[in-house]
Length: 215
Image 1 (cartoon, rainbow, N blue to C red):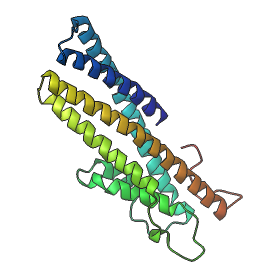
Image 2: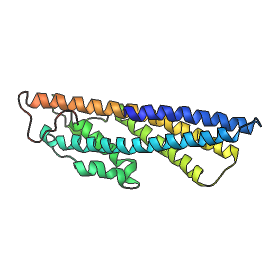
Image 3: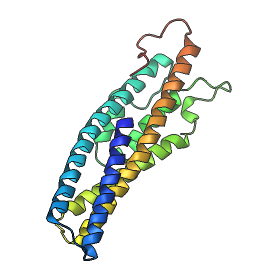
């Protein structure tokens, strides 16, 4: 996630530089062929790095979701709606991936907490705003990025259209930075909740099947 944030910050700066170049061209100022070529090459390199980091980050994050959910039975959670496999699998099912992954991570957060003294089931706990914000920015950044990608692939090559696409990519990169920050907080919060519950259940030895810290 930290790597994603760093690369996206570089992408925002690169997008902003491209916007400046396009504005100069729209205003009738001189833009040399060398400047245009350098801009295209820079954007291509940044885009490739973003893609590689995205694949690495998504793979790591999905592995963490799978392992965090797999811990739940060992932490005493019963009546789980999802399995570790489907907590990950729903990310790849069209339409359902708009809300099922959010529900799965919400289940992980709720079931990772300590037992409530009043006997309230973990299922009745409200999903915290942290997870709602994470999922909201995740959906929004993907929507804006998809919109920019479709516009870029549609063949529009006027300076005005290119400027709109550049602004959309800049917005998508900025939203992804915020989403990555929230994702970091979600990981940290669930990790702490599971460790607290583990210590409450058995301060001396781990329950069978519990994953070690650091996944």
